Image (tube, rainbow, N blue to C red; front, top):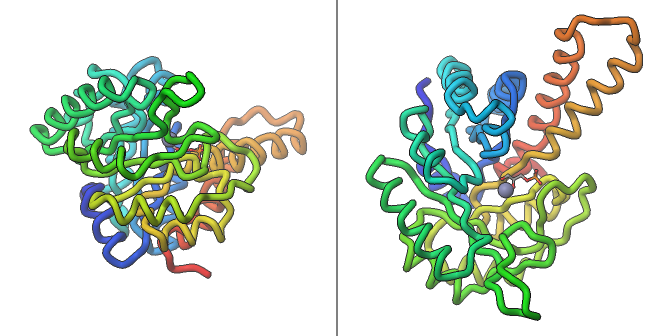
Length: 286
Ligand code: G3H
Ligand code: ZN
């Protein structure tokens, strides 16, 4: 089927008190693995490409995006394509022509007023291009003299009142919030602030997004989805799975030189990791 729209998938998931998993894809093998896992699980999924992944591909967005579009087309489940953690206007504006239906515009490192101005401008452009726009608000600067903390900085917390004002002032479609997760965790022991999440859910009428979800254990993920998180971003968990499998494959086959052998092991491990997480996030497991 053709690519699904991120906004529609997230809205449908939220309406049934579930969420959609959004997996970071870096290589073709990631794309193939995540689509295959979603088909086996029978759940919709979001493939997301981050600005860091674009940098890894020499600044080129189109080739990986085209691979995602082509792998999504024959899929038996809805697949959406999302551009993640975009900090530059140049990349933002490439989203529409490469088949993305949504973008996360990341200006959370800026002081509040500048974050609002940049995000509002991004939202106006995105809506004009038919795209759904996610933004983030971590912790506004000023506490202990420190600058703003983004939504996945350890220790950051989003204030519900500020978040409501931010959504009103920017017109964004979804908000990434800081409730205790942090990016790139390799252990799954994050504890979320569920009271704060409940307050944010009550204060806001846009879907809430959890970043840094690799470090959040299954029971915490389930509670977060039940408590109002409608999009769950996962990246590092796939990197751990892929790298562990490739490392052990190469250790067991020191003389092998065919990349297909270890890439197949890596791709299989991603499929398995995504397949385990999909039902947890969708709210259909446990
Ligand atoms: O935007 C992407 C995510 O926040 C991924 O975070 O790599 O810690 O799972 P993670
Ligand atoms: Zn993130």
